[in-house]
Image 1 (cartoon, rainbow, N blue to C red):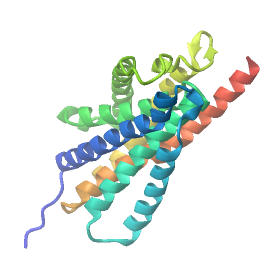
Image 2 (tube, rainbow, N blue to C red; image 1 turned 30 degrees about the horizontal axis):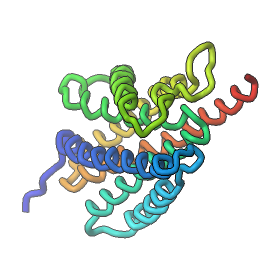
Image 3 (cartoon, rainbow, N blue to C red; image 1 turned 120 degrees about the horizontal axis):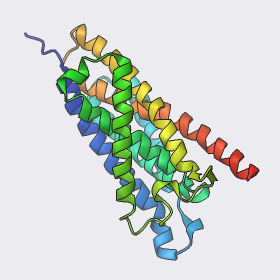
Image 4 (spheres, rainbow, N blue to C red; image 1 turned 60 degrees about the vertical axis):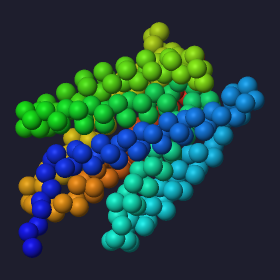
Length: 245
């Protein structure tokens, strides 16, 4: 029987599917978190249920993926969906507690992944060295991040100060949330290019067809494993600056 080897196009296709699932779940997490605010009109009524549900789902699906060898595509999809619910819910919940920081960082992370998926469809880009890929990914991430914030301005159920991190404290006249997002983009770009290098090494060795889903899952995991520490550092920096001010 002939074994079908996975290609970078296969990986991109599966990663795109998983990212659409993650992005949709993140939007659902955002809306579910602010639903009590919409009904009651008080900003301190945001609910933590979406992100708590998401983190439980991520842990359960993550454990299952280490033990189950069958129906992994379904498990990977469930993991990504709960990851999106967690990221969207967490960023929005703490947007109320620490305005203007985490949501901007979350959008910076997602924007960089979008840029990655777009840039890798361009053949010459895939053959660039890692440093050049990181530079292009950062620039692309900034473009998509701008589009994300322009979209935020049209979401009536979010506070007017949500876009561009305007609800955060300012440093030299710029919102800390915006600064945090701009600084986060190069870090996640570096992490994604590293992940891509490992995937390409596996592809060169002749990975079988099902690996495309595993590779896409690896990219989604990179978002949470590198994104959360970055967001946490920026939040602590924001607290420090706010205290000084």
